[in-house]
Length: 286
Image (cartoon, rainbow, N blue to C red; front, side):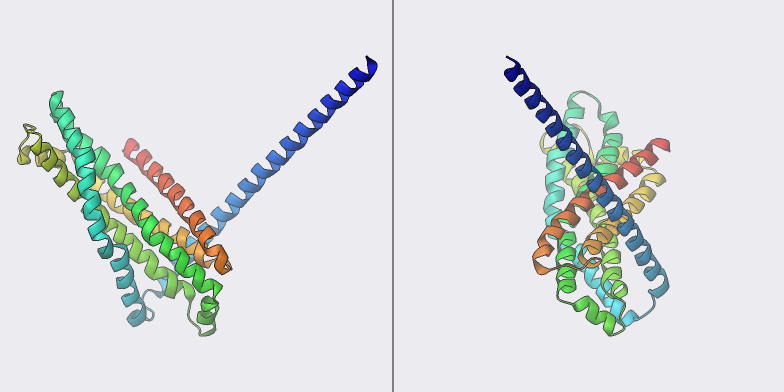
């Protein structure tokens, strides 16, 4: 009996110590993750400040080299994505705007149509969806290109030639992505609102185009235009900073590029959601 009791106590003590060790290891893991996140935030903040400083101080330097690169990045993050965004705008209009107009008409609440479209499409869904699509397509390319260049020693070669890598590699991408997301957001919003009304018209919703546009225009204010422009530019800036940071700021091997690209896209999504949350607070306070 005593032997069985001793064995039971021994097993219990072993289980307690095992749980304590597991708890300690879990705490260590959380601490490591938190510490790593703080280091990443510090690195991103420093990288963003350096990039802003280079933009302000060297915008006119080597304009014959930098300006064509900026136009190239605007084309890649904007013009080249217009066909895809045409499809997305049509789909968004049919799936969201058209059904919303139809439902509001059935319940006799078409007076709230303008406010609903402004909040859902103009303020939230349009800018955020645009940022996510550009991040998935262009942001990933930034990480792969810069990570490969860093792994192959091309960044060090630029420095040896006296060329600032941030000025040559980062600034065009930041400006191009910011302007590209801003333009694509306007394109997506207009396309979604237009295709949404067409879908509602095909469902015989008793709403004329004039009343539809009047309600939307009446719900828009100057603050919506200002915050929309600021939000989209900030989306582009922070997406470019996150992707370029992971591709350029740290030495990489070729086999690490794909893993870093996944991490950069994940952090880019988190940053976009946080920026959008800040603007939601601004909308609520104004």
